[in-house]
Image 1 (tube, rainbow, N blue to C red):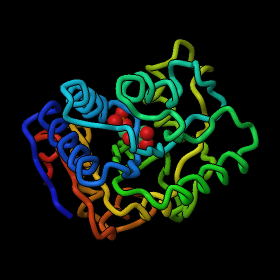
Image 2 (tube, helix red, strand yellow):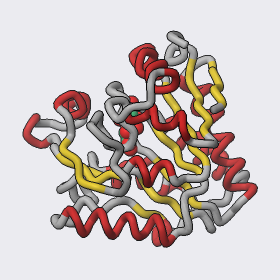
Image 3 (tube, rainbow, N blue to C red):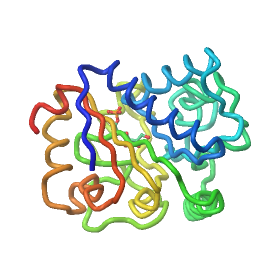
Image 4 (cartoon, rainbow, N blue to C red):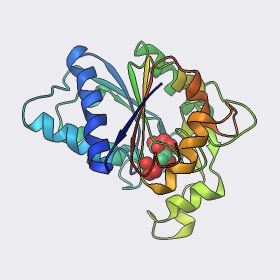
Length: 241
Ligand code: F6R
């Protein structure tokens, strides 16, 4: 595991964007695993800037996203479908047919999850998976549990995650309580993983995930067992290391 400590959020975003763009340049038809949330917003903005300058070409890139809320339609501005279009896809020359997000509009949870797992497999495996880190150690929406889920599945979100997301919704009853997410197995099958985290509020969980015991109660701790992980932190997130 390589740990890169950067000055602040902008610096973290630039370093992460550098790693992703190196992947695209060295393998133009790569498969990128993408995340949503606040952590990658600056990374996507930087990638868009570099695309606009002519330094990046997404025309052959395929993407698979970690997760999606169950029940949110594509035009809901809190859906991850909307987020990805808003922050990245609509600003670069990626082929929309090559972008894949679990289908939150599919009411049959088993079908939504099986279909998505099959898509990830049919893409030939993820070359580089970008991850953020939840305060309770979740990656994707794999919440602390008794075991590590192998495949894409439907999860009940924990109260802390529902509350953390509540700020994005007008009414508490609008906050989704379930999500479709890649499993820990799906994530771990990626050839390379890039974990980003910023801010003091992530410092304790960063330490626990990277140096604590590997256990499903801290889902991100499994990354210690992946052969090719790069972690990019800002100074605050690295402050307990
Ligand atoms: C998002 C995702 C989540 C977030 C995590 C951190 O697709 O999978 O695991 O990465 O909740 O969120 P932020 O970046 O908002 O702190």
